[in-house]
Image (tube, rainbow over all chains, first blue to last red; front, side):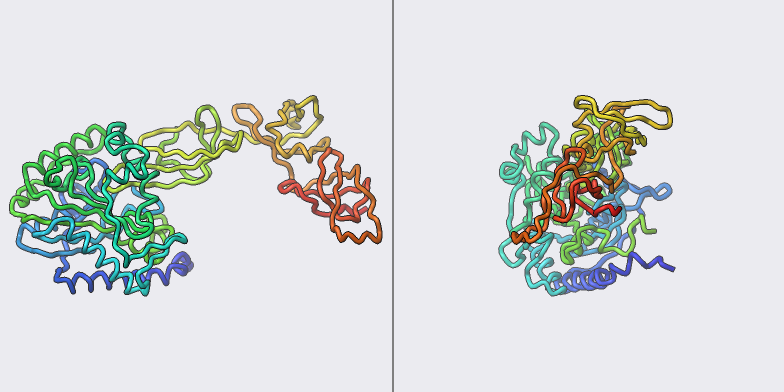
Length: 307
Length: 187
């Protein structure tokens, strides 16, 4: 039998992966969060224009555990986290697997700035656990975790690196191309970067910023050019959420994608969710970063091609 | 017709009328954004490298390339004439498309000709060919300059460096991939 051959070179990464998962659980338990488990197989997903869903008979495999986790907030839980498998159809590249591991955590009576602080504390604690002492090396470049993390708005990032304003990029439908090709390679290089305040239409589950309605309280965390996490101050107004979901459904229809019915129980429960903030953190990518792996394949036991 | 999902290293596609080979490819997706396919491609005619980013749903025309084994006949002005030994069809290839292979073409040598839309775009030769030295200075015994090579001109006009002991009229083997001297042909 040589079925283990590809695994021989990954043994050390997989042992470190277990260590990192343990350190994440310790971090949350020490900070008063409880670990929850919610179903992977759900009747309908959140309508999002650019996430393709893996179908399981008449239900779907969740692309994120957010629906059920926010329903737990409605039920009175105040600090919860979950580490689980998520599915996104067709996503396969050096940083993508169609089945991957996500960490999500939620806080009530908080906004996205508390999640920025959580990210700093979490990444430092986990880096310590694998002996990195505040410094991350990725592809020969050094990022310092212990220095103050950069907080950069999307607007500033476009004017600094994009060569075009964010408004012009949106108008010309070039937002994603410029983000990937021109901006992302600069992010999180000296210190990690919190890229924040996305245009409202780029954050369909995020609360609009008070006093600045054209941006949403959403941020993404980048370290060493790698996108790791996406966070919001949660939108908890069911009517506004319904309106934004309908917009996403229209975008899906225009792109010729399946349009699912709205998650009505979620919208019902949203009315009783207190002001909250939540974040989705790609664990395979965090492990890649901490272990200086170039491809996501190097930090998982099996890719789809190896099954 | 290919879709972006078919893109992979080594795939040959037609862009703006030219054949391109995909040399690097990755799927990327900014948070909550759409899937993008970043590719690096090489123009198979002039070697230019092209970076392009595609969205899902875009399509490509395949580049149909044909490889034929042909025999080199002769040079006429700036063109090189080859013949297909299967059907005796003759084609003429420009100096540009021949590239470095022109340095190693001797009568009757067999070469692989790459064709795109029936137009020759490249020639590949065997890795090693034997060519005769038509001019080189004699080895001066007792030369104390310590030089371990000297220039030599081959029958094709190509000039390269050879060891000092090679004499005019000798047959030597050249590595066509590097254009370097490989060995002396005995006898």
